[in-house]
Amino acid sequence: MTTKGERTREKILVEARLVFKRKGFGATTINDLLNAAGTTKGNLYFHFADKEAVGLEVLRREQQSFYRFLDQALAGKSPAVGLDNFFRKALEKQSQQGFVGGCLFGNTALETSDTAPVFAGLVQEVFAEWMRKLEQKIASAQVDEQIRTDISAGALAELVVTTIEGGIMQSRLQKSETPLKRSLETLRRVLELKIMTHIEI
Amino acid sequence: MTTKGERTREKILVEARLVFKRKGFGATTINDLLNAAGTTKGNLYFHFADKEAVGLEVLRREQQSFYRFLDQALAGKSPAVGLDNFFRKALEKQSQQGFVGGCLFGNTALETSDTAPVFAGLVQEVFAEWMRKLEQKIASAQVDEQIRTDISAGALAELVVTTIEGGIMQSRLQKSETPLKRSLETLRRVLELKIMTHIEI
Image (tube, rainbow over all chains, first blue to last red; front, side, top):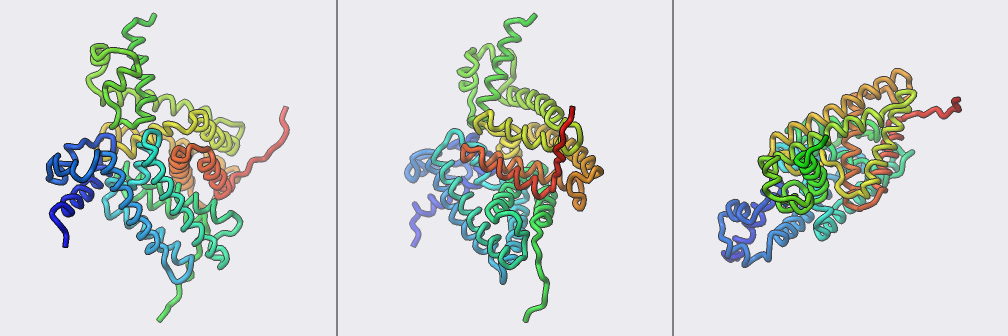
């Protein structure tokens, strides 16, 4: 059973995530959080010490949800199919948000990495894990010779992550799918990702 | 001759740029700007209507200085040498700042593009001009067959910009040259940029 207090806490976190993504962490005030969640100062401070505490919990939950996304998106009947799925689902995920808000980890990296070491640590962990999962999948696709093998899996994984974050930045700025979509298409070509299409039962 | 008022205005803009880069625009207060510039509220409001007006003027000056950087960095005795210089100088520019502050246009794009249309418009203009200059240089290098020709110059230019912005993000987060340096190296390899080293008098 969920108590009223738990529901309030949940509502604050869900709404705070959207406000942080849209406005940035620094420009968000406690009043913005109260208005978005439809709650009182007393309720918010019962659950969280300050804005930083809300931000950290929002990032922790985003981390868990992103790891689940990665595992689902990278799944496929071969490593190359998994990578192909991942590229498609990364674009879908951003398109569904209408290119508002972008990537909470990328935003936090650029906005707070020089001023909030706790946030920066968590965001670094997320990017390291993302690259690690991609590197494993790319290394397996290299064994299958379904992706170029003359550049290390680690270097290719890093190029994928930097291109996606830069592509999200341009798509968010232009409020258009085009920059991220085209960057991903060019990336696929330079990675020489081969997808064998064949009929299966 | 510079008047005292002009020197104050200049000091506010120079210091505000550094504070915005480090803290983000949203988290910067008018008091931060006064402390950094060592001036009074009366002086600041004499020159600027509000924080947004300071931000916009900082961005306009950054735009002019970035265009000069691009023209200098992309110069070279051939288009391919120009691109090679550009990759080197982009890394140098970030290293010199110790990976603090990153790219003011990228930061502004992620922090304010959903909330400050005037900033977003200027930043879009900067990225469009950056891609246009790169596209011209890449197209010339393609004529010389000094870079891969099977992907359009526009698509390659877009990949360069997204990779650099994503690479700056990672280098800033890790406070290390490595991510941007490695991303640029991988990028050079996938672009198949050929630099003919030969002795000239």
